[in-house]
Amino acid sequence: MSLADDLSAFKSKLKAQPSLKQKRVISSTSAASSQDSDDDRKRKKVKTSLVYSQPADTGLGNHQLTQLHHAVEFIKKQDRPVSVADLSAYLSHVASPALLAQLQRIDRINYDPIAHTYEYRPLHNIRSADSLLLFLRRQQTARGLSVKELKDGWSTCIEAIDTLEKSGDILVLRTKKEGTPRLVWANMGGPIGTVESEFVTAWNKIQIPPPAELPGRLSEVGLKPTSVDPATIKKAAPVQERKQKKPRKGKVTNTHLTGVLKDYSRR
Image (cartoon, rainbow, N blue to C red):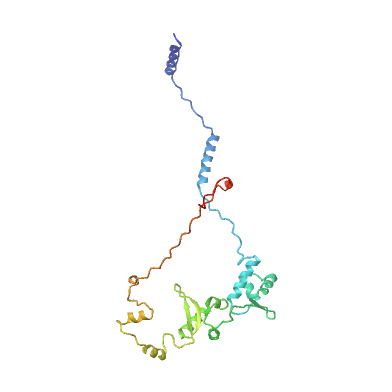
């Protein structure tokens, strides 16, 4: 027999033999460990809400510059002198000597050493409707007073402005979108919306030519009537000046052969 026949006979004998199933014995320790691993997986899937520690509420901040900023804003909003006790109550702690010293060095804050109070000095010392009206009437120009500058030391000036506007004592320029006041002037004239009889009489005395003669009268004085279409008016074309061309100069060549070649340019 050949080697191939022996190999095929051996494979057929292996297939003819009965197969035995091997039993697998699981120990109690392995079963417990597998159960523990399943429990760990379940625990990982459960989301836990952790509460992290929050910083303590320090009121308006503990930094000295932060305290100084809030102190100035608080004094600025008050229309009266502010004591150290009121300032400490607003800052939620006692005002330090260093903070008070910095407040005294600010030019826009007046310090009263007798009463130990601090008062903001605005751009305009106006805190009532009467003082506003007196200030506007003393102005020598028609520049107008900015409401932003007025609110610098008088936070409730909008109510007084509305009252004076309704009574006709001042003129107010408002924004288009919000309608908030921007500039104010004193009403140096009469009631708003009326015209004096002198101007009405002068207006009625003006004689207007008939409509047929109006275009010609306007053209005589160099004006264009609105009834004429501007596109139909012929405009004189501007005269363009022609530029004279400069004669070209010949390019001189062979300068290194000046003494060798003959010059025929004069013939």
